[in-house]
Image (cartoon, rainbow, N blue to C red; front, side, top):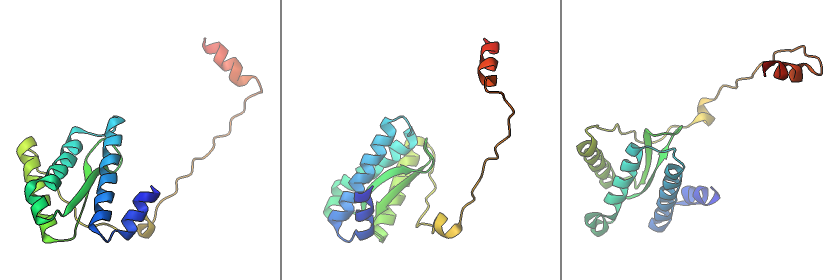
Amino acid sequence: MQTFKALLTSASSSNQLTALGELLYQCHYSYSACGLGSDGTDRLVHLVQELQHSAASKSEGGTLYGAKITGGGSGGTVCVIGKNCLKSSEQIIELQKRYKKATGYLPFIFEGSSPGAGKFGYLKIRRRATPRKVDSYGDINAALAEK
């Protein structure tokens, strides 16, 4: 995580962005290997890699660097790291078209970022303890009675 944070906060060169993208790919494939991913997100990440490594992208200077599943788990959203330029937007639209052609579903594209929970705030939920009156052997006796 420290390497990822350092690359993210200081990514100014193509080499740094490439390293950041590689970390995203590694995180994604580790996540999927644990059984938490989905076919849809795996397909999207693979399509980003295809676009990144295509002959046209290499000759024109690539603008996409990596991708990984994001969110609460088991699919749905993929984060793609790319340069902030028209070429990246065009590649994302191409990715969307390829995904639709392969699956019949047109993925929704979110751009940019939100300020996050730091600006929005959060709710803290506290669990209330329910008082129980049990003698010192009550739990053991109850467990024995169930058998």
